[in-house]
Length: 66
Image (cartoon, rainbow, N blue to C red; front, top):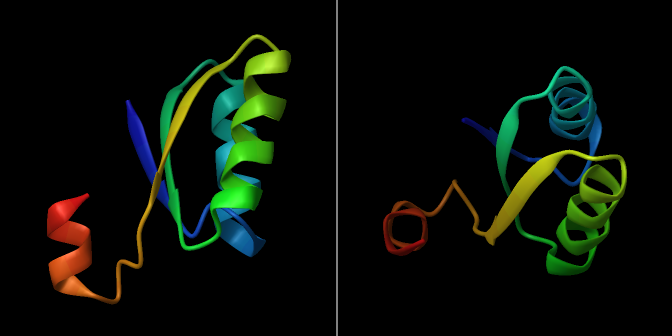
């Protein structure tokens, strides 16, 4: 299992897509629930395994609760 932070855009998004294409099970984390839902659906539609957590990893308290 791979946890990808910042999964809704940029390097995090690219990393998530590449890891999913290689068969990794993913936990996606970012602040944007809508974008996380879309990415999770995209990965699952392509046969991958992903779930998501809405979190801001810059906020230690929020990340610990997630």
